[in-house]
Length: 55
Image (cartoon, rainbow, N blue to C red; front, side, top):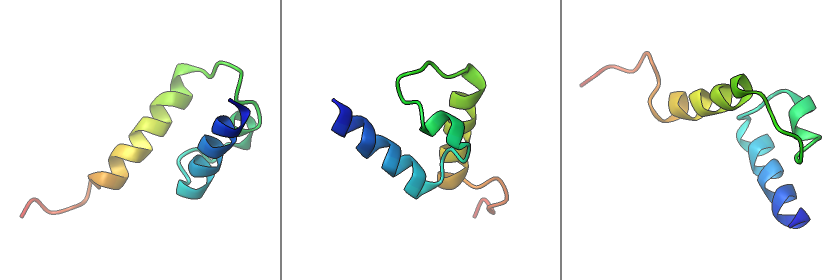
C-alpha cells in the first residue's frame, strides 16, 4: 500500500496539482475540504481553461 501512495504523490507532484508540500508529506492524514476542492479545480482548469474561446 505504501508504494501505491508514493506513486500517487509522485504523480501529483509531476502534474503540479497540489503545490503545498504540507499535504504531500502526510498522505495518511485527512485533508480539509478546501484542499480537495483546490485540486479538483486545478484539474478542471487544465482540461477546460477558463479563457479558451468557444469555437
